[in-house]
Amino acid sequence: MNNEPLNLNIMGRDFCIACPDEEREEILLAAAYLDKKIQEIKAEGKIVDSDRIALIAALQIAHELLALRNGTGFDIDEFRRRIVSLRKKVDEVLTDKES
Image 1 (cartoon, helix red, strand yellow):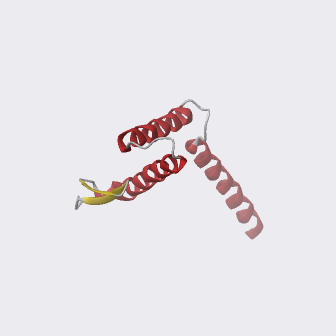
Image 2 (cartoon, rainbow, N blue to C red; image 1 turned 90 degrees about the vertical axis):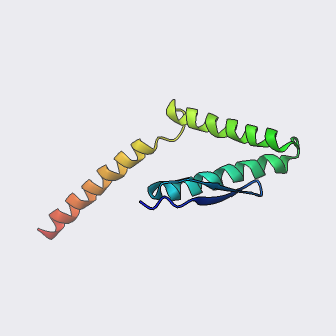
C-alpha cells in the first residue's frame, strides 16, 4: 500500500487528495462522473455561480444514489448475481457437451 497522493481535476481546478492504492480507480471514476455532472449543469446556463453548480451536481448524484438504494434504480448486486447464475448455467451446459 503506497498511498501516494492522487491528483484530480474538477471544474478546471486541480485537487490533490490522499487515497489508498486500492481505491484510486474508483476515486478517479467518481471525480470524472462529478465533473461530467458539473459540466452538464454549466452547459444549461441557468446557474452561473461555481459553488451553486457544484452543490446542484452533488445533490443530483446523492439523489441517484438514494434511488439506487431504494430500489427505484439499477441494482448492481442483483446484476452480479444474475451474471454468476448465467455463468454457472453456461458452465453446466459446456460440461455436459464435453461428457
